[in-house]
Figure 1 (spheres, rainbow, N blue to C red):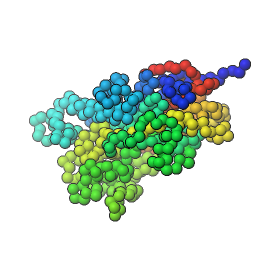
Figure 2: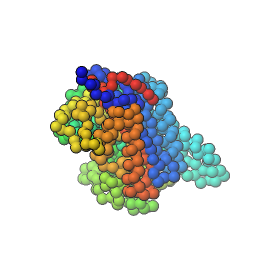
Figure 3: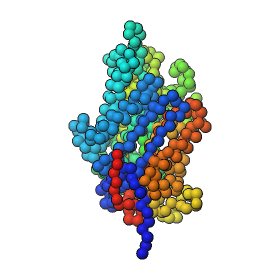
Figure 4: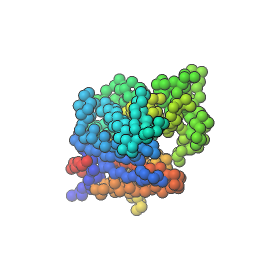
Length: 472
């Protein structure tokens, strides 16, 4: 009699069954951890929510000396309530399963509104008089003084939702996510740009095209060749000041009064100067007005040698303000210049991912080995991938491919396979390693860091447990 191998996941923190092409359930095991870094307070936050066949992962990175923590904490509580109550405030979205795009867009909207209310309450609790301006941002003063100051601050927000047989990603800001596989089987175009709430909304194809053929067909049409195979794919949208599409969006929202070829916001490389006018520009414009990245920043912001860049209010603004990305929750003053809380939304088909994973043969297995020299079982390599969602305090210290090598190492896979808290142990180990890197790279200036790891696998005979366990 053949002995049945152990299940891949002994327990799943959040697990569910979906109507995949095989008819078998999909299992998810999640873990998360956070580190204050060198800051005086941890302004990061995160949560994992699961119920009725849906898993929501979310990381938030607050900023602003007075209200950064308020922004992230408020967004977390608001979003948990929102998803728990199945989006009751959105008439067009009775259920996240049937209107996922609208639901994720509205999630960012309700969190943004809640942050504004929380800012007012926080400032008033500190004895400030608070006033909302015609532009919609808040200013404060302590009576009987007459001088007003601006309430500055906000939060990034990145959400991954596993719904039915799809993965959806909606984000604003620079808290990024990747999907990782044991072998080079994925392609960069597997993430389909479903829509951009800040640029006209949902694209003209439906969320029901869930087969590999339809998803890959759209990918090829939008992005060209899918031939290059990867073990790491970035799943969040880029909202860096170096994004040409964001430059164009900012210019369309509010152009420079003196030169309408540019946005009113200054898009510059950070020179660590108090005077933003001394910072070099990010873009040059060609004869047609199209932006092109100059790539001559003043210093690198992370180990991947990406330039530090900013969007900053013009010299004529009543209040000076700057931000290292172009979309965020909160940042009410910068929103009058084109920063937005409206997310981009991407998606991919789980069936497509399973097909890619199963395209491997045992001869294509990678070189990652456990301490004893055992490689990952080919059946496991063909049945599991990992999502890593984290704030920039993590990504500052890693090449994306190195994160994949960590979370897909056979020792991590074994922990997830054999222990109820396997993913949590991986998350803690990963964040401990990140803390070492952060101290080495940034010393006392190390940023807050928060990360979620989510191992996703298809339940197949002999590899996965068919017992479904759900927990929020």
